Length: 388
Image 1: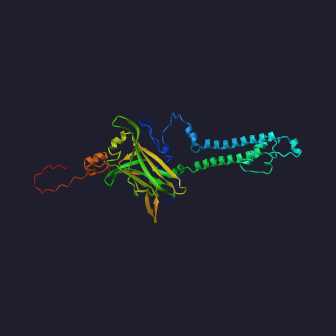
Image 2: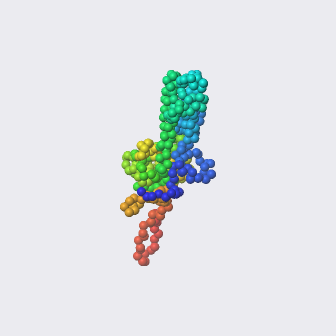
Image 3: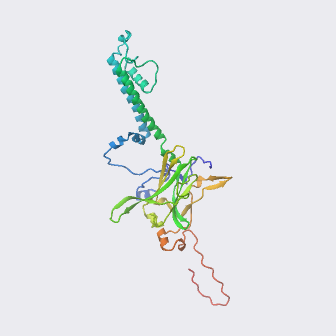
C-alpha cells in the first residue's frame, strides 16, 4: 500500500472530522432544516420527555459503557472507595464489639478477631488488603469470631463482582467498535452523473488501515418530508435505495477506495429529482457502512450523510489507484476530487419519457455537430438549408 503522509488532504474527511471542516454559510444554515445525521455519523436526535428513567438502571452495564469517560472514572473510583469504607466500618465494629481495640486485654493473651486492629484507620487498611488481595503480614483473621469469617467471605465475593463489572466496562469503552470507524472515510461530496447510459448517484468510501473490514456492506437511505394519500405528514420518511455493488451480490472488498453507485431507476426515490429540484428540495441521503473488524471480530459501523448542497450534479470522481513498479498505489490526495462531465440536467423520469440520454444536449459539453453540407457545383442557384 502507498505510504500515507501525516497531513490529511482537504478532499477527503475522517468521519469524526467531517463536520468540523464542513462550514456552510450562515444564510444557508438558517434557511434549511436540521440534518438527520451529521457528517461525523452522529444522529441529530434529542430524546425528551422520557418518563420511565428506571429502564436505564435495569441495564446497568450498558448504561455505564454509554457514559462519558469522566463519569465512568468517577463511578469506578467511588465504587471501590465506598466498598472499602463500608467494610472498613464493619471490621471496626467487629473489633469494637469483641474488645480488640482494648490494648490492655490484648497484652493478657487475649485472641482478637483480627490482629493488629487498633483504630478505624487500621480497619480501613485491612479492608483494602482483603478486597484487593494485598497481604503485608501484619493483619489477619483468626478463628475467634464467626462474624469475621463471614465478613471476609462476603467482601471477597463483592470485590470480585465490582472488579468484573468495572474492568469489563473500561475494556468495552476502550475497544468500542466506533473507534475502528475513525479510519473509515467517505468523500466530502456525492455526485450525480451518467454511467453506462443511466443517471447514477455515487459516493466514494475507503479504509485507511491495512487490516480489512470483513463482509463489509453499504446501505443508503433517503430522508425527506413526505405526505400520504390520506394527508398524513411524515416529517422523517426513511426510504431505502438500492446500490449497484461493484464487487458482486455479497459484501464489498474494501481493500482500496470504492465508488458506491446507485442507479436512478423507476423504483428509486430520486427518480423524479432533477438538478433544479435538488437545489429546492430538502432531502438528505444517509450512507451506512457496516462490517466486522478483522483484528477483533467486533462489528463496526460508520455513517455519514449528504444534504442537497453536498450533492454535485454533473460531476464524477477521478481515479485514485495506479500501478507503480508492480504494485497498486492509492493516491488519497485524489479521494474526493471530482471533474465536470456532460450530464443532462433533467430527472431520470424525464429521460425515460423522452427516449433516453441521447435525446438531450449534455451540459458542459459540445453540442452535436450538424451534418456536413454537400458542396454544390458552381453555377447552381444558392438554396437555403435548415440544420436541425
